[in-house]
Image (cartoon, rainbow, N blue to C red; front, side):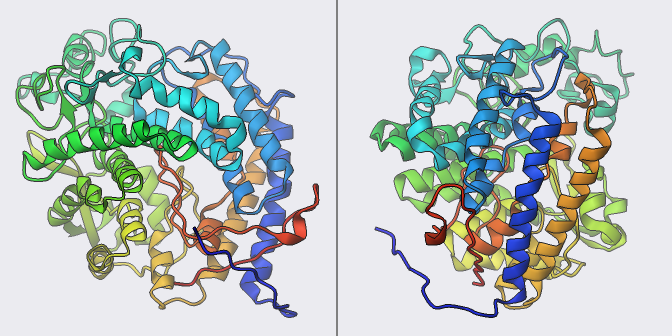
Length: 533
């Protein structure tokens, strides 16, 4: 049993952070209603008249609402839950009509994107378990039950990188070539770069073997590390049902990947051939799988999937050694780090860090490699703090806390700096939050709440600019870029928790609040809370 603490002592003059927190709740309550009016139809779907030309895109529809039920759980208005359910159901019908879903679930796509799609569903399961538990069980069965064709129990692996509710969906793309755009090629390069002779010219996309038959043959079958995010789906079913079979599946699947990592010194490989061998389709390489270490994102995808699985394993089994699925890889990229200014790095994520670092793009600081290929480690970026913060929050261990302290010491910029940006993950302020928890920055609550207010108002202005726009397929990210619900500050301050791992994690937290003054339907909650250590 968890302790229940009732707050009963009146506070006649609330501190500034408390009034700022309630002001943010009030602003968010107005903002989500305006988004629903401006961008959605009566049944909850997004206003979109186009078609989708590839397997990509389903995640962008769900992502526009991913943190709406999270805001409800934090203390948003009671009718926000009803709205969130309507939007999930409306978007699900919409995507089914667009041919993206079967039986309310993705027909088959990678779990870097599927994990993003599932966050809205996971928060709804947390907020309304009686209405979503049956779906949660049905979705998890797609992987736990080998009869659906996604899981190979003999080799303890997921059979293909693109997986879901449609076993007929094979490979990585429809047609003859992977739909890789020139601007994406400039940022991330190409998969399977070793299949072309050194110094050879880059062929046009259609006949490029790296985007055609070689990609289909070497990357379109077998397991890939990003599939570890499936453990979030199965953990969700275990939480809602308590059935041991879900716990056992997580333990088995995570255990198989831990063994593969241990066999090569601890660093997680990214691919498993259909016969169960690491590197079996890549001439022995432990790197090079789909959405793996080499292409396109490296640690940005591998690290997030690994921490999702590590936390799922620890939560389901009670065995915190599951966290060693991710620790060796994290420590390896830190060991490979270099001090440089971001503007001098080879980062493929320039648009992300230019905003997040602000004026410190020219400040020498620790950069770590996100990717690995035949040429070794490359694609240097500042450390993404979601993984080490999630580790420390779960374990509270001296080792995981010490890693954060070392990262802070190696940083060339002041971790107390709060910049008014909002990333796609609705995260990125882990450094100043850690400084606050360390007792170094008592003004953080007021400053992060002010930054959150600024971002809501920025999104409201963006909504006004694009209201009534007929969104083409190329611009479907407009919805998530305009979503005015910001939750990172509230998660940190009230739950004392890191923001959810964006590519399919379940929310970590140690406290929640239930407002006795808002038990009557229609009344908004009025709790303000601060976790300071």
